[in-house]
Image 1 (spheres, rainbow, N blue to C red):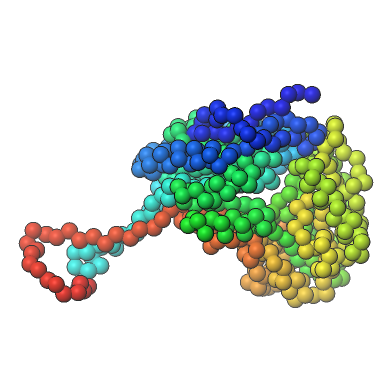
Image 2 (cartoon, rainbow, N blue to C red):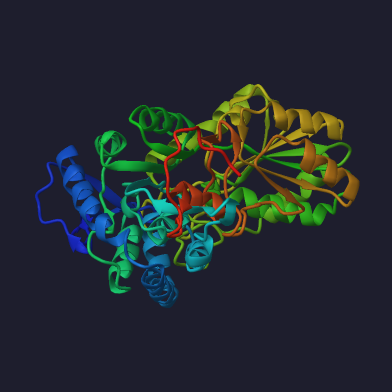
Length: 499
């Protein structure tokens, strides 16, 4: 067994040279082997990094858009050239298969490409002669230091929802990645330095709740972006806003896929398997509840079961369709829902605990699992399991299925499968969910649209990336200007009037 590698903070591009009072283990979830020892930041370390970032922002925020864009284009080229290396780091610490990890980096790359258009995105408005010889124009300016707290399930893509836009808008960044799979963020941060980003503009601190609280309460941190579970998202939002920060906190999900009787059931079955079990179900956009409108449920369950039998679960570096879950604790928690679902009366069609895994060692594996005859009061329906567990709920009509989705406290993503254009159009208007797919099971928007849900899936008013992201990382300012010609003069104490 090899000696675990030390993983530490990056202050600019420089590894932190201190001694951590606390550390955390990092594992390869496919083998169960500890591969890293992660330094956990104290509040004092966070303060050191934030103050350095603030000093760097004072220069970076005044650099021209042309020079910022040059750095962004250089970063884009470096990331594209080394995306396979980043994907390998993701697989080694998260466990997802290499093709999925590479797809994650590629989707993050799309946001970088969007941010490369920052000169156009930051253009203001101008109105000439709104009053005699008075002009009005708007500008957008950077905030300062922005904190980003990212989750384990997308260790590269989610940070790139925020970092490129924040930097393009002239801010300095302090990011705290998940302590479960921290190496991808360190590698991406090194590429920013290689692209020519000035020291201190991009920084990485690793840690747990102590580091999070230090960021949420630090007076020099002006905004916080968070993605994670709903209870923590609510905590981040309430704590951050109470300390005067602008916060966007994306929470959990319970995504439904509504299948109408006229749908192409082969397409729907493929979609359910792909969206339910990709990345071991550890996606905030995963389909975890399939609502089948009768009389198609039996046939659809049969088709899904047949496809699940062809999936191979194992080490993500091998010829596997699905990898392990991220930690043993998480794997055991997800597996406990199989007993809970059975005890509640659901039909366990496919048991993911009874499977062979293509891996060495004691990895954190659970194969794809399927429940049928699930009802809304069961914990396998109410809870965000965040694992490869798909629940089939039977509905008697479109209206019943829609009501079920709208009654759910989450509103992140949803999908409808149908060949009826009228039903699809009605669904997109009536469903109370932020991101909707029509015959598309994972409706993640392109980078120039914004990502975010409704209800308990989002705290704050601003979604990630797209123009909402640009607005989040800047403040608007309106200037009213009058330049008097030489002939003007005299006093007038009356109230100013437009003329």
